[in-house]
Image (cartoon, rainbow, N blue to C red; front, side, top):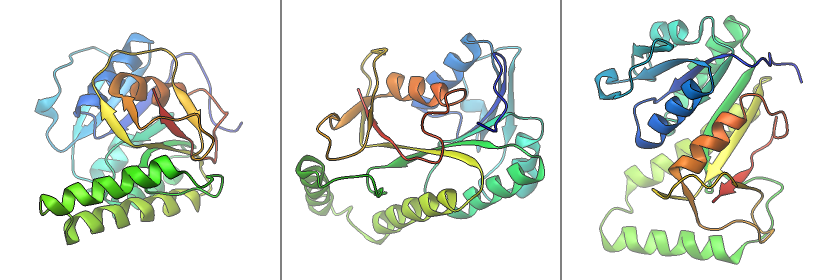
Length: 220
C-alpha cells in the first residue's frame, strides 16, 4: 500500500452536504479525522466542529478544488455525473501528491469481475420502466448514466490508489455495522444500502487497502 495510513488523517469530501454525506462527515469527525467539506452551498451543512473546514465551489472550479485537496491525505468524491470535475480532482491530487481516492459510483458502471445477475438486470429494467412511465427516462437521465460510466473509466485509468464504491438503491435504515461487499452475480448483495452503512463503508476505505484499484458493489 502506497498511501499514507495513520490513525488521524485529513479527508476531503466532495459533495459534503448531502444526506449520506452528513453521516460520513460525522462518522469521520467522531473517529478523530479532520474533514474538508467541499460543496456548492456550504450553508446546507448542519454539523459544526473544530476539525471541519468547509470550502465553497462547483465541480468545475479548479482553484477551489485545489484548495480543498492541498494538505489532504484522502479524497472521497460523492458527487457523480460530472466527469470533468473528476478530471480536475485527479489533476489536483497528482499536483499535491495525494494518492488515495474513493469515488461513489453505481451498479450501472459494470466491472469485469461481475457475473450475470438476473436480480440486478431486473432492477435496472424496472427502474427504466418506471422512469418511462413518469416521463423521466430522457436525454438528461441517459447523459447522467453516461457520465457515471465515464467517471468510472477516468478513475480506473488514473495511477492513483483508487476505489470505486458501487451502490444501487439507498434507504434510511440504521447503521448495521455489517456492510456486504463484492461483485454482482455472486448472490451476496441485495438491492439497497442504508445511507449509514454506505457512509461506514466509505470511511473504512480511508485506511483499508482491500479494494485498492477495485470496484466493489455494496449493500446492507
